Image 1 (tube, rainbow, N blue to C red):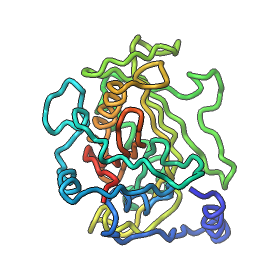
Image 2 (image 1 turned 60 degrees about the vertical axis):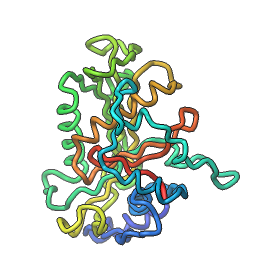
Image 3 (image 1 turned 135 degrees about the vertical axis):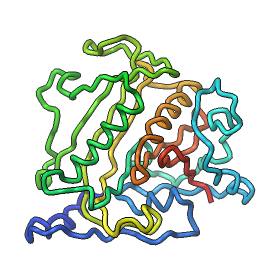
Length: 287
C-alpha cells in the first residue's frame, strides 16, 4: 500500500464530506491466477504468479483441497503434499521487503452491511470476532493493553483520524496443541496466540466482478491487515509446525464470509508456497 496515493484519495473526501469511490481493478485478468487478481484489486503490494504445466494448474483448481494436520492422511490434505513446484523462488534483484513477505487479511465489505451507527471497520471487526468464537469456543479475548502494560489499545496512524485496531486472542484448539506460554495473563497454559491488526476500510470501491459476483455494486475495501498465529514461543517454525499453523488459519477461513481473504506468504525453508484462502478454499499463485 502506498501512503502518498492513499492520501490523495482520502483528501477529496475530507474536503467534500462525501465518500469517494476508489479507482481499482474490477475485471478478471484471465492471463493471471485468481489469487493474483484478488491481490491486484486490493491495496496490497502485488505478488507474482509461478508458471507451471497445465496439468499441475488444473490439478490445483480442485476446491476440496485443504490444510490439515500432518497426521491426516486424506489425499486432499495439502499439508501432506509436495508443493515445491508451486513455489516461485526468483524475484527481481535487490527487491526490498514487501507486504507479501507477511500474512495479511483482505476484504471487500458489502456496502449494505454498514450503517451510520456501524461503520465498515466496526462491522469487519464484529464479523472477525464472531468467526473466531465459532472456530474456537474455548478462547480468551485480550486487548493489547493487557499484553504489553500500555494503556493503548487503539492507536492513530495520523491520517484523518484513521485508526488501526489491534486485537489478540488466546485460543485452545481441539486438534492442534499449541505451546505458547510467554504471557502472564493467559487463563490456561499451552495456548495459541492469534494476532490481528485491523487497518479498517480504505474507502468505497466498485466491487470487482470476480468478488461477490452479482450481489453488490459497491463495497468497502479493507486495507491489508496483518494476521498471525503463534503455535509456539519459538519464532522459527519447523516443517510440521508451519503446516499446523496453516491448518489453524484454514479453520478460521472456513468460518469467514467469501468477501474476506487471508493471504499466507511463502515459506521457502519449509517448502510452502504463497496462497490466498477464501472461505477455506486455497487459491495458489500459479499460471
